[in-house]
Each structure stands twice: as C-alpha cells, then as structure tokens.
Length: 185
Image 1: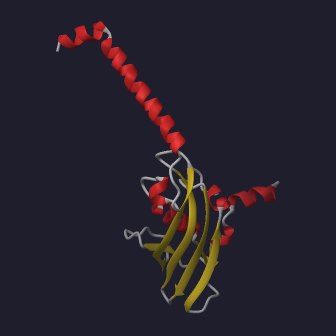
Image 2 (image 1 turned 30 degrees about the horizontal axis):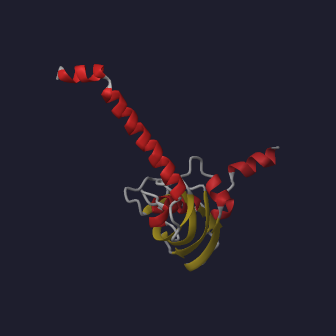
Image 3 (image 1 turned 180 degrees about the vertical axis):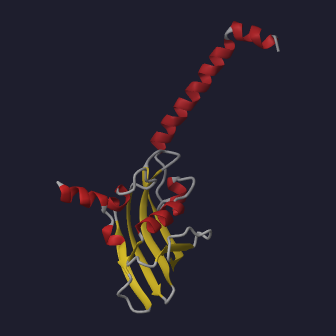
C-alpha cells in the first residue's frame, strides 16, 4: 500500500534530470509525452496527446541553460462542433536555471532560481506549461486541425436549437401583455 502511494506522488519521476554528475557542456535528453503525462496534472486543459520533447541541457559553472523542442499532436475539443480533433504543435523554448543559497523568486519568467544543494531538476512542469500555452485560444477543427472538417450534423443540430430559442422569444413578444409594457417606455 505504501509503495503505491509513493508512486502516485511521483508519477513524473522520469522527467527529472540529474545534473550534478554531468560535465560542463551540452547534454541531450529525450522524453515521450502521452496521456498519462496529462493525467498527472489535475484540471489539465489538454487530456490526450502524443508528443516528444527534446531537452538540451547546457551546463555551465554558475547556471544551466535548457533548450526545449516539443513536437507532436494534442487532442482538443472543437469550440464550434464539440468534436475531438488532433492539433499539431511545435514548440521551441528556453529556460535559464541559476543557483543560489536560498530558493529565491525571479522577476524574469525565463530565469528560474534553485538551491545550490539541488542535484536534479524536474522539467515536467515546464514542459506542461509550454504545451498549455501553445493551445490556441479558439479551438476549431478546420482552422487548427490536420485538415479535419467540423461535424456538419452537430452544427445543424446546434443551429436548430439556436433558431428554436429565437422563435420562442418572438412568441413571447407576440403576447399583448409585453406590448402593453413596451408602451410604458
């Protein structure tokens, strides 16, 4: 039972990069991102995906420079027809990690400060943030997908429901009591 709880606390352990034993210079790390990655983040905007993340760690005397290249597909819900569709994303980002005696907050979003005693860095949250920021604000199959068209049957159904509500409003306007109230304006 206890081992199971520990596994649940550290589901993204494979996204930790131990940097203390590395020589100064550039080192490459590859990560596979699938549905279990997104399941580890509660209330995730993205629930499904199949991506690869290549992280180049440039170890220097006083800091680490991380270059992220994330490429693949994420599954989104269309805002127009409500269907799921795969949207391709390609991300290139950089993160600077500086060392300090105490973990201080940095005003610069590109600079992260960690304690000198740390021996590894967890990149899962950074990867998650980069993917989440890459999600388009308006998610429509036709505009953001792989050439997929919106579900016309669902759009027709939604339009019928929208038209029905307009007809009901017109019926309410036909009620003579409303006409009498409008004359009071």
